[in-house]
Length: 404
Ligand SMILES: Cc1ncc(COP(=O)(O)O)c(C=O)c1O
Image 1: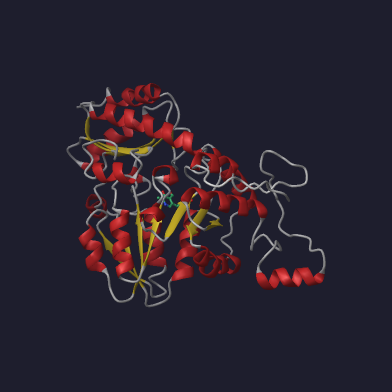
Image 2: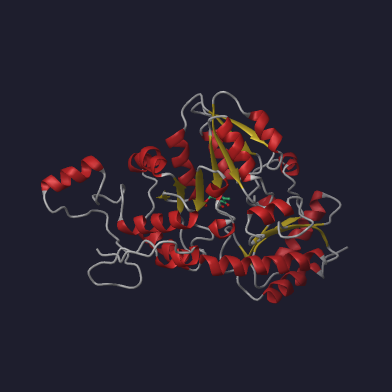
């Protein structure tokens, strides 16, 4: 394979398209897909050497050239030395836990994180003696007060799903490092187009490639971006033995998705801001949650931390006297849509509408949901690339026919 050496100092837009291309002897312009499990070894001595050092390709659970291209391209965009792929975002978190933690270690997590993340730490790894403390997403003092002598990891997600709460990455990095712990940030919602957490002090960036990196809702993928030492010493041995490996086909789809990440995400942010402003003006809407709006409690922090962009996801609250009436109203607005997809996912070109209280947060009790600020009248919209007035018209169909 050949690769022309790229000039130094390329900008993210260029890296997204040009970096990590290992061309075959055919000189293909679009990245090749190496859909192979095994790699033929030239001789036994080379085979033995590759197995001993982990260098060169042997078996796809250890590495594959298409997966390597995806890892290098994502690391270039996140500004980290290295990255490692996983079968899904949750697979990446599992790899991180297995690579960094052992029984008796303590972790601090925002209680507003993605539900499966909360369950993986508290329920699944609670069984193995990893202790988790849940704190407020936005109150830095609570994170600070939760630190213990055995704290090894702080893990934050910003903005959160579905209420788009933003936490201060630089402040959390300071707390983590003061305690001799690491800070990991789930960057699935923001993507490196909005924020590069390691530039703010984070040690690990976690991705669900299923979302914006793919960008067209096709495949599951995940990754951890970090120093070469963390990737080679802590994470790679876990993937090799536990097998939450990224498939070459999925890596190729996401690798190609990354080429258009910047233009897609910026257009989705523009669309989401228009929709958020429009929703704020609708009389049936009690509240809009979007970091790009001055009414958002962490608007100033978000604009500073997120490259001046609010992201592609927003939520809004319908007024309703009782949980039952609020739920009926939310279902009416969602079911009146003819364009938007009622689906689970985000970061797609197609706008997705969902009712968090009965889907992503359906397993929480009403009390837990209320503590998280999610009511039966909350609707989440993951904005796509349709003309935004068509999206507004679709929502208006239900909003204007709501019973008082
Ligand atoms: C913020 C966030 N992190 C992690 C995940 C998990 O990613 P995956 O579905 O790729 O396992 C999701 C999925 O919705 C998510 O929204």
